[in-house]
Length: 103
Image (cartoon, rainbow, N blue to C red; front, side, top):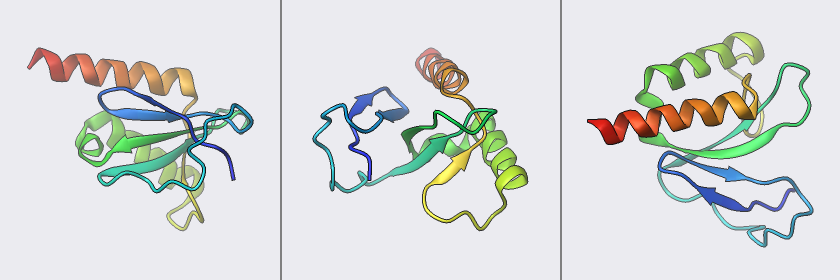
């Protein structure tokens, strides 16, 4: 299993790739967060993130969950895979954070 290093934003934690000495191996997922695996178009280079549960009510997150259901189905074993590359996901999270701060 990969070591998970956390880089916190207001909505999501980025969980880094194995071998970077993160030191969070074996730690539990914090209460109120959902782990996701971001899968790019080619299916390689997935990045793992933790997303706050309350962020799932956002329309853009709901659209990502619907895309995941269409592409991978509802019976995914393990971490929920999302068909979105890391760059697009981080742009979306940044937009959600700025929208939250503006209100």
